[in-house]
Image (cartoon, rainbow, N blue to C red; front, side):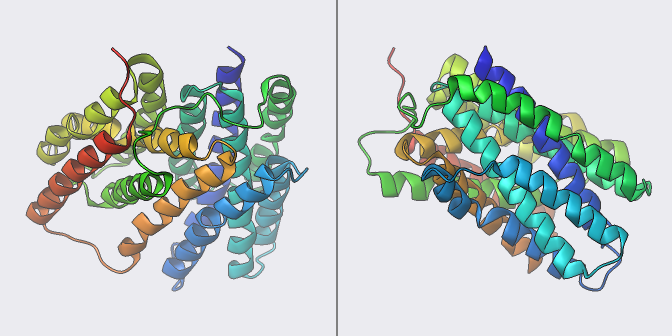
Length: 342
């Protein structure tokens, strides 16, 4: 299916841009300003996506993926010549922002009402994040990262050829939201779920995570979960997927603190909410897929923001927090998701 091929191509594009981003960000971990640079990256990579998406929705004839690839290459060259860190992070974050929004626009418009392509696209980020961190940890030279980054151009060009054959200007086939509730309420509640998912990424009890391989498995479980969310929505419906990803994941999240396998299952299941929230918001903004994706990335930024201020270290409090928030998400999703016809 053409749309799934586009999703796979953008999986690799997303994978590579995150390699570059987290390779660079990881190089500043010894800096006294690391928290500020990380916050700056999160802000400019996530928050402006709605604006870029709006411009794309209105017909701006710029390929954001190619532009983003060029900017990320420039950021690598800048860090190679030891230029100002703030400027490097600014260029890097804008490049990431542009690649993300092009991927979202392309996969949503070409998928004919299916969530699998967009979910596959988004899942590539988790694998790219951990890969970028590993490459920085092992001091892989910047010129090699530049080569990897430029290779992004190959799937971009292939994808553009496919996308031109199947792209639709609107998302008329998206019907994942509850039509008995007004759009503003649905979007607000969906963003709430995104905020919770982002915050819980830092709050889920994982005292088992002590080795490098365990960290790799953690990120991989997130990526697999994001892809599975879209696949299950298209297979069993959004309402059942929402129930499985929230209430179904709860015992694994709470009782998997010291047991890696159980915890990873819970994290994978809860990560499926990504595709659910994107599908619901896109259903309410059929003419503006870029803006729809921008709402989800705004939620990601807001959810990660508290972590820059404080972290809860108590296992008991984290378990209570995870339980309350997961149940809240389950209730919210049961309200805003469309009930499938039997």
